[in-house]
Amino acid sequence: MSHNKVSKVVIPAAGFGTRFLPQTKAMPKEMLPIVDKPVIQYVVEEAVESGVKDIVIITGSNKRAIEDHFDILNADLINNLEKGGKTELIEKTQKISNMANFIYIRQKGPYGNGTPILSAEPVIDGEPFAVLWGDEFIYSKPPRLKQMIDVYEKYGGVVISGVRIKEKQDLKRYGIADITQVEGNVFKINEIVEKPNPDTAPSNLATHGGYILPPEIFKALKSVEPGKGGEVWLVDGINKLREQGVDIYAVEIVNGKYYDTGNKLEYMKTAIELALEHPDLKEDLKKFLKELNLE
Image 1: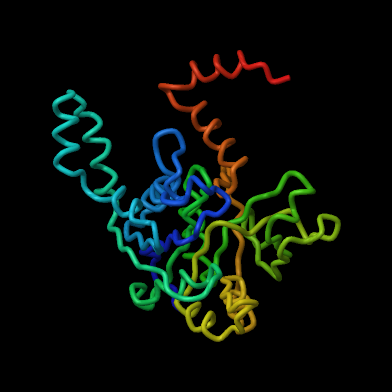
Image 2: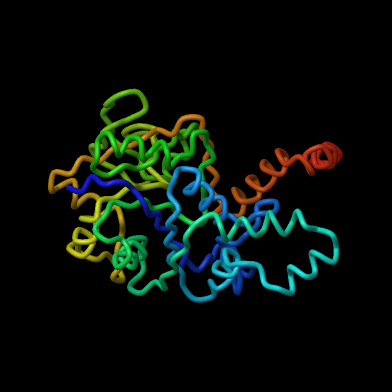
């Protein structure tokens, strides 16, 4: 098994965003704003803060806005900001394109979250790599991905981020791991039960959101039997590696908060929560919320 340094992060961002229609008819769901930054920028910043600067974004139709966002500022916008004396905005916005090396690949293949992984194979160069979804993020100190990389460098195998689900009834929304503790917040995964009955779930640790995968995942994904409609699912490839003797680990992320911006209610909660932490907004927003008649 490869056990080299993780130098690339793959961010799948080719989904249709049907839960946000009509908003996402022409706008990528990954570009939905959380205060003044799109969701996918939080994901990229996590990767960069974890020491990984090669960002591979898997896109689809109507996703051009993602590339434009991480591109350099155009001359007209710079001139407009300069005339308005907004040089601080120029500096802040230019940092976006300079913080990482961006590679864009158009997704090809059947439905399923294993397809964008396969699409990234030509640029992975036989090395281990990370996967972070483009429409959700975990905020933590140190960053989630850094915590995962530390575990990977010690144990190898496959590493998946884990978060504890506090409400028992919510267990049915996630893939829940049957686990054996290795040390501290590191667990060996014996099995992942997708969307279990809350009364029979093997634990309350959801394995979700972030992955470090060996390059052997590509062969595994190609060898699994496609599901209904020809879908290719990442978990099936991971299970194939487990059958081949590869150890699968879960890292319970410390000091972390999971933000699921893939559905309307959780997206609104995320926007409000992070706005309440924004130095320019928090006091006025608190005042506004307190004045609302919520009965």
